[in-house]
Length: 167
Image (cartoon, rainbow, N blue to C red; front, side, top):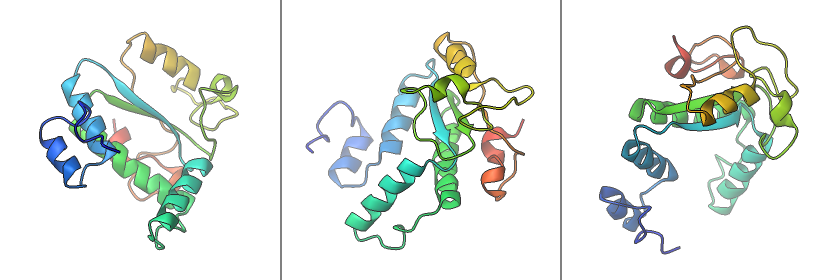
């Protein structure tokens, strides 16, 4: 796509891009590093059905048949590894995980009801609803990463990454 020569790929990342080794995750990490006083965030369902479908389709089109049958728990494990990498590289990163498979919250009414328990809500003591978390985020209030479940590794979709959510 001739993107390697654009400002999106600066420094060492340009060489990685030209070698076909750059990833979007590296672009995000470079950007978070360049702007340490800006908070970056992700809003993600633990088992986002549309993202899984896109991932499976791309895997099939690239002949990666082992990845073409990606399950919800495997997707959650992969997103955790990406978000853990972001968190380790940049302390100005937060994630709001929502239980379930809802794809996107901000363009529809689910943004008003979602909590870490699910797209249709449910109170979680001590955790803000998604809309409040977003309001704090855009108001430049320090936001913490949020997730429903105990902070433990290998606990599946009923848990939260210990690396991201251990207090």
